[in-house]
Amino acid sequence: MKHADTPRPFTIEIVDWPGEKARLSSIRTEVFIEEQQVPPDLEWDGLDETAIHLLALDADGRAIGCARILEPNIIGRMAVCKSWRRHGIGDALLTTAVRLCRQRGHGPIRLSAQTHAIPFYERAGFRVCSEEYPDAGIPHCDMQLT
Image (cartoon, rainbow, N blue to C red; front, side, top):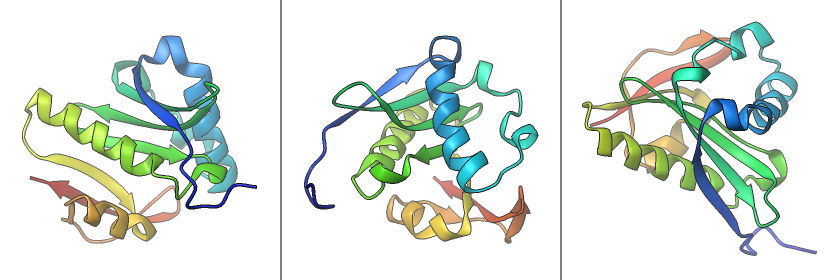
């Protein structure tokens, strides 16, 4: 039996939507549509084809987390499968996304955070820059890293 503090190996890969649509979609369906009850028509917004995608994989190559980057430097759709939360996958996805945004050099890095996740993003240096608003029925705030 593994404990939450036992390291679990994983990797983060930069992938494209056509090649990894099935695995990226399965994570987002599990986390956003099934777990958080986001309507499918809001989740599938038509922006995936032009986004940069990150895919977290366990040691056996199973998809366990994802994120995407939209122009100009907007991080979104960060999701980690429930059984892999609190194992550093979210931190690794965010760190990789921030690094890619900085390499592209398009100014501040922005995201829309579910309010319960604000402390997670604040630990990475993001700051709230909007009032709270609903997105898919879930409270969000815009955040920025300068």
